[in-house]
Amino acid sequence: ETGVTQSPTHLIKTRGQQVTLRCSSQSGHNTVSWYQQALGQGPQFIFQYYREEENGRGNFPPRFSGLQFPNYSSELNVNALELDDSALYLCASSLESVPYGYTFGSGTRLTVV
Amino acid sequence: DQQVKQNSPSLSVQEGRISILNCDYTNSMFDYFLWYKKYPAEGPTFLISISSIKDKNEDGRFTVFLNKSAKHLSLHIVPSQPGDSAVYFCAGATNKLIFGTGTLLAVQP
Image (cartoon, rainbow over all chains, first blue to last red; front, side):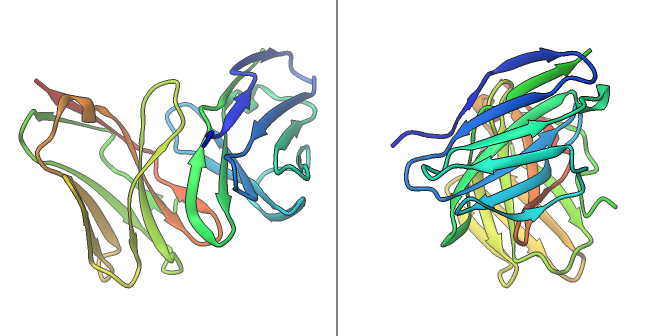
C-alpha cells in the first residue's frame, strides 16, 4: 500500500508567477484535500475534491484552484503568486466512506521571492 | 476566527513521565476531534481520535479526553519517550479539518 506522494518537495518562485503542485493519493482513496501551513501555524484547509468535483472550499481566493483526475491524483494551482503564499502545502487523501481517515503527504515547501 | 486553539507553544517533559497536551475549541459542530503528530520535513501522522459523543478514547500509551461543557480536549501520553518529541496538532472535524497551531513536545532522556 503506497502512501500519499507530493511533488516537488521544494520550489522557489517569483512574485506574480504561477505554480502547480502535484499529489498522488494513497491507493484506494477517492478524496483529496489540500492544506496550507504557514510558518508557526497549523494547516489551513484550502479545498477538497471528490470524484473530480470540488467538494468544499476554505477561505482562499480564486487564484487558488485545483483539479482531481480519474485516477484520484490531484493538482493545486496558484496564480499571481504573492509573498504570503510562501508555505508548506500539504495534500491529504481519504476514502469518502471513512471521512476522517486522512493520510497526509510530506508536503511541498513553496518559497515566493 | 480561530476555532481550535492550542495555547501552549511548547512543552518539555522527562522521559517516563506523563505528557499532557491541551486544546480548546469554539465550534460546537465538530463531529470528531483528532490528534496528529508531525516531525520536521514530514506530513502530519494520525495519532488518535475521539467522537464528539464520547469523553475518553485510549490507544496504548495515548489517551484523549473530551470535556464538551468546557469545550476542551487533552492528549495524555504515558509514559513519555524521547521518540515522542514532535509537534502535536489537535484538529476538529466537520467536512474538513480545522487545526490548532500546534504544541512542540520535547521529551528529555
